[in-house]
Image (cartoon, rainbow, N blue to C red; front, side, top):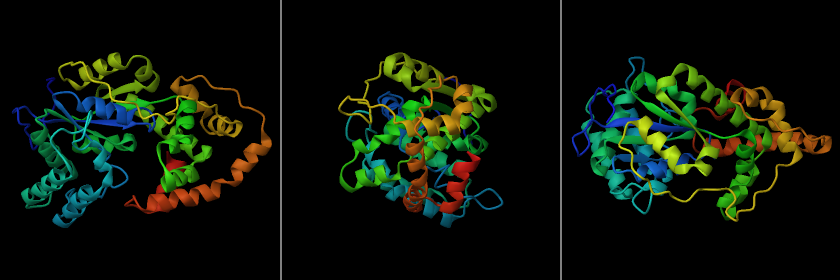
Length: 341
C-alpha cells in the first residue's frame, strides 16, 4: 500500500495494516453511489454511506478543538439512527460484508465506551473508521458524502493524509438527472422530490460544486482525483483502475454494480427551454472554466417568467426538507448555498 501520513490514532485493520482514510465527494447524480459500491467490492476497501459528518451535520467543537462527551454521544447517536446507512449494510454486491444494522449500532456503542475524555472531530472519525476496518478486514476506509467537497479544508485540517475521489458531470446532464430523479422513488417520496425541483436551484448547486472542484485542483492537487461521469459510462473499468492506483491499493477487477440512473426505462428526455436558460444565465462563465461546451439559450420568455414565479414555493419546500436533516439554521444554510457557493 502506498505510504502516507499515518493517522495519530494509528487504527488497525484485521490484517494488521494501517487503516487509511479516503473520501468520495463531488457532484450528486454523477456516480458517487456507483463509485462507493464499486470500491466496496475490493478486497481491501470498506466504503460507507453519507454520514454528512463534516458537512450538513457537522458540530463545531469547543475552543480547544475537542468534542465534549455529550457531543460525542449526540454525534454517535445520530449515526446510529441515520436511515441512510441501510443501503450499504450487509445485503448484496457493493455493500459492507459483515456489518448489518445491529452490528452497526453495537460498533458505535463500542466506540462511545472507548472514549473517556474530550476528543477532536478527526480522532472521533478515525475511531469509527477503525471499527469499520476491523469488522470488514479492510486496510482502507472510504466515506461517501457528495457535499463534503465544500469542506475539504476542514477535513484536511483534521486528517492531513486524506485523499479525495472527486466526481463531476456536465451541467446539462446534471440538471436533467436531478429533474427526473423522482423516477427512482414512489408515492409521497416521488411527489416531494418533484415538488423541490427547480432549475434555478439545481443550477446554483452545480455552480457551487464546480467552484469547489476547481478550487481543490489548485489547493490540494496531490490529494485529489477528478472523475468525469461520461468516463464512467464509457470506460468504467479503466476509471476504476485509475481510482485504485490513486488510492494506493492493489488493482483488482471490480464487479460493476447497477447504475442508479434517473432514466430506468432508458428513455432520456431533452431539457426544457427554462432549464437551459437558468443554467446558462447562472453558470455560463463556470461552464467555460470547467471546459464543457455551452448550449444555445432558447428564446422562451413566458416559460422563463413562469419558472421565475415558482422559485419562492420551491425554496419553502426545500427549506422544510432541510430542516429535518440539518444541524445548522436552515435560512443560513440556504443563503450560504445560494450566494456563497
